[in-house]
Length: 142
Image (spheres, one colour):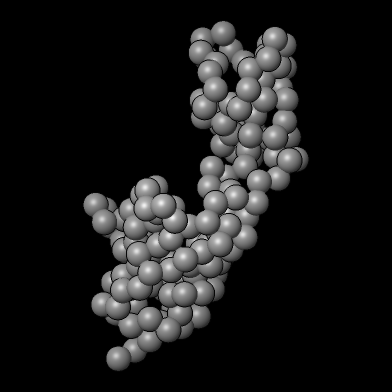
């Protein structure tokens, strides 16, 4: 059988969970995830484990935080003046927002803390700092 190699476009089904077993994402109820191996489209720890798989093969892949979304970075946590937020937005811890950067990009942030005059926003990926486990099935080499 043909084995997946770097540069191949592949389709996989996956279930992502934390080491304790709690699932955080799965493609099982939707179309398989399509990407090109080695292109940086998915986390590196999972990408390199797909290489060498055959269509129909399944495997469990453990990915350390450093090879997933990295460690949380302090510079991704910033304070914003409370008056910047429209009054119709009910600010609460855990609220997910999109903010526009100085160069016009929109990035997702989470409200981490609400203080008297400022709101602490966190732009780290929600899975930063977490080890992950994936059950992966190679569905197709396109």
